Every structure is written in structure tokens, then in C-alpha cells.
Image 1: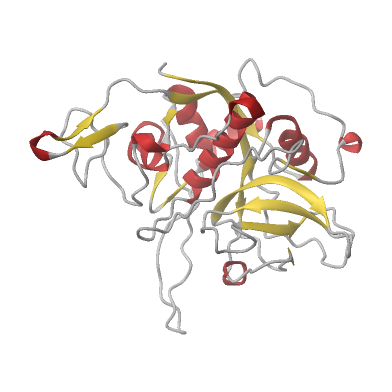
Image 2 (image 1 turned 45 degrees about the vertical axis):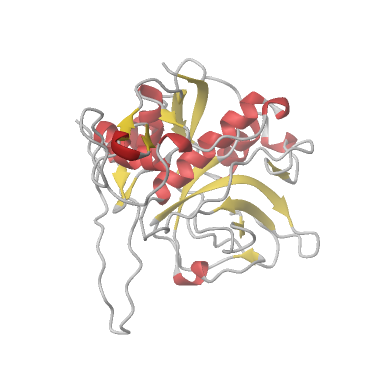
Length: 314
């Protein structure tokens, strides 16, 4: 039995009249404890990392040997607000890793169906809904059932059922479906490829984050998404006192500012391209020696990854 929720999700109105930012992260404590012990890494997950001292000062999968392996920036909040950051951060990291595994000669990049994860993944692994969720059970879902391409079930930012035997409606979205004009309407597709992973694990902390990103690709991490962070428009970000994880993003690399020598993580958010630096953010690392400090909204505390295996029907 999966133990899913340790954070409650609620909107409440403070005295200012504004709506309090919702907590979109609901951790499966049992699964994270198992990941802490490397119980789900699989046969491909028992590998050694490059020593930290050997890693480059700057590294990003957005420009690896001249190729951008990153999937597209997404916006979880359209066409309506949906607390699906946990699905966005994890599926984007998975898509990146598949692109990396395929190599530069097999692009363009794929985009995975977040709606499938919300509609079908939650039925299987209780990973979450538009009311919040957890990135780790998304990897669990990918291992057991696979995640299809975005074109199988386009993002609608709504909670639905996932029943292939029932008609396709606003309340029911099968794992993969298509629609025809006239009386034929919409119907489920029974045979379609999905992205599977061979294992998944935890990679929290400065050193392991760098080593895992460098070896296999972007990772998903929790972060304290404050009002100040939402207003971010660019630069090296740091915020003292922000330590409560309520949002999931992906980390795609790191760098060092040439002028200030501040070391930072390169974070991809799911708030659309207009936010931040083209949908991305540079936030200080815990080992930063530059003037921006080390307060980084708890981004190094809860990070996870999965090892892509195949994109196939089974």
C-alpha cells in the first residue's frame, strides 16, 4: 500500500486579501525512504560517478557539444491553473534523458504526456493530480506502465478518469486517444509507444546532483516557490528563509557567473517561456563562494532521477 500524502493542499486567504500560494508537493514518504536505500535503481543503476573534482566548472544539457537536448518549456497553469509541477518537472527530465540517450543524430526531441500522468498515472501509483503530487511515483509509473508522447493525450490541466472502455469525455481521458469528425467522435487507441525506465533513485545534495546530471541528464528537485521567486525576471537568484518545499522543477546543469564568480544551478520551471530567463532560472548552489550567498530555496534537499530504458509499446 502506497503512503502518499504528508503535505495537505489548501487555499487560504491571508489578511492582505491575496490567495496564499498552494503547496503542490505531497510526498510519498514510503517510496522516498526506499529510494534513500537505492531499492529501485534497477540493474543499470549500480554505477560509479565521475569524481566531483573532475567535473567542469560549467555544464548544461542545453548546450552539450553544440546540441540542445532539452525538451520544450511548458506552462502548467494553462488553459487553467493546475498544480501539476510534480508531473512537469519529472516528465521534462525524462524526455531530456531520452533525447540524450538517442544522441544528436536522432532529434528532434520528444515531449511526454503530462495529462496521461495526471489522468492515468495517479490511478496506478497515486502520483498526484492538479491538486498536487510527487515526482518519485511518476518514475515508478514510467517503470511499470510507461508514459506516452504528448500527442497521445494533450495537456488540458484538469483531473480526469482514465478508462479505455468508457467514452472519451471531459471527465474521462484514456491513456492514448484521437478524435474524428462527425459521428465517429473520439476513441481510445490501444497500441502506442511509451517511455519506460529501468530504475529510479534519489540524488539530493550538491555533489550527487552534479554527478547524476553530468552522467545521465537532468533531474527533478523540490523547491520553495515564493512570491519573490514568481516575480523573478533574471540574474543570479538567492533568497534567505525560503526552506519549505512546495513546488517541483528540473535542474539541467550549473555554471559560474563571469563577473561575480557566483556558482549557480540552471533550473527549468513550468511557468512558461515568459517567466525568468526564457523559462529558466539561475539560483545559487550551496557551495557558492560569490557575493550572492548560498540561500537557494531548498533546491538541493529533495532530488530524484530515473534511468530511461526504451520508447516502445511494451
